[in-house]
Amino acid sequence: MAFEKICTVDDVWEGDMDAFETKNGTQVLVLGVDGGGFKSFQAICPHQEIELVEGEFDGKVLTCKAHLWQFDTANGQGLNPTDCKIAEYPIKTEGDDIFVDIEGIEPFTAHS
Image (cartoon, rainbow, N blue to C red; front, side):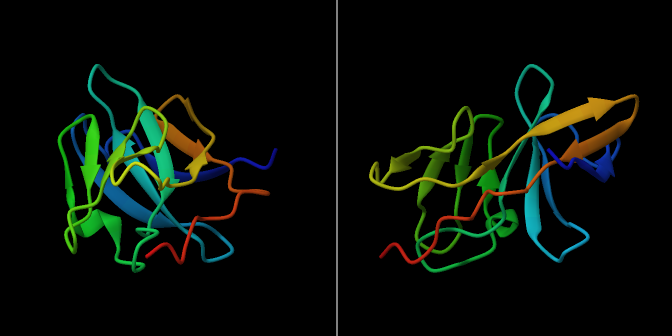
């Protein structure tokens, strides 16, 4: 695994999200999930490649702004519709730093 620092715990608060760029230019979405902790997913919606950071996040469900597709942030599985998914990246914190590993994980795309 090749974890790299993407942001700090002060950049994403509980119930909040933000997009960050890795060293190779991949956009990742970091979410502060309900109850504390962080999750990281691909930053674009698999439907029509809209930036998910422009949508809404209620601490558990991520909603794309364009067509209101929804994703369960426990596992990235689509809730509406249910036959889609967003790629999840391994994430860890060390002190105040947040690290993600995108190696070998491709974002899901081209779902219409």
